[in-house]
Image: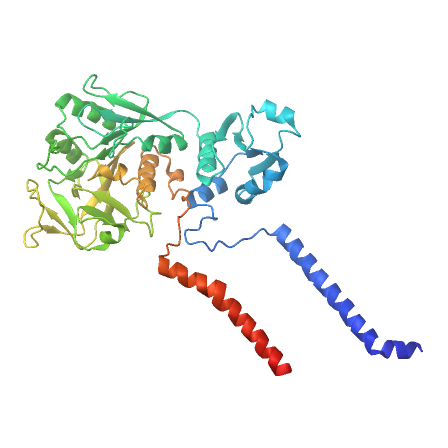
Length: 451
């Protein structure tokens, strides 16, 4: 009787089902255990939206002190923060992420001064910062601010038609102010005409495209500051004489830059490759995709930058200063010296052919300068591809914060699908009519064959 029951077909099937259930449950348990021990994910988005940026990885993995990120919200809202914050937590043992419900732990929220849901605080020893939003850029910026002690100030020179942080116009530098503040810099506008002396608290001096000639006292003040161990970023446009707002040649300033190893040529660079047309740019906007090995641009691989109305630069070696090329235009570019014509035309037989140097860094002892042959690349073109990253890299190198040089967190990419009426109608009829009819037809055909 027992042998017959064991040999019965129903008994064998039951045993098979039980074995399958045990195997499946064991596989699921093993997968769950591995998932808890090894948190891995794959980002298949085009711009790696769900992958932490190079800068975030560099900052967090390089932490040498304990940092704590605390997220304050209702318990049911924790999952929306975990997707981002847990990526920070997995990068370093020196960083810890805590989740606090202010309703369940009001004493903790009160001690931290939390008044709103969704607040994010970053603490490193005695230093305390708050991220303004649940974004990588804000959180990484807050981590940087907790790491950096002391004040660092970027001073923009005004008085001769320069772009400053107060300029909210199309070519103004007002958008640079929040970028610098995220990296723990303060900003200030100074006039060297009123008092020809750079304040001691200026960590970096910004000369943003002066339209008028500098007088000797202003140049002397800049020279004293730089040669005394100061850092400065010079953005000089091509000296165009045509139009309502001509750009002066600024001979005193360019002569001083030549003493520091950088020659600013009196020309205008033009790009004839046609690549800029892909981005809607004209030939007066130089598209740069080739960079050197300098720390400022070493990590700018596969990133393009744009420079409107640029002049070319040359390196002058042999002195106390050591100039280094940063980036150049393409081979299909020319530099014309005809700067008075309303319509710029290229003369291949006369004009200098590319690649043309557009950015140079130079140093001597503790003194550092960066010169770029364009100023409006930080105005209306600040959001163009790598322009923002390049600017912040320059500031960080000038202030000796090389560990912060990297590509910053990316903005979410807008990948909308634009359809015309014909395409929308085709999708409608295909999904609403053709596919259902095909399924119904297949069912009728199968029923007819079986009948």
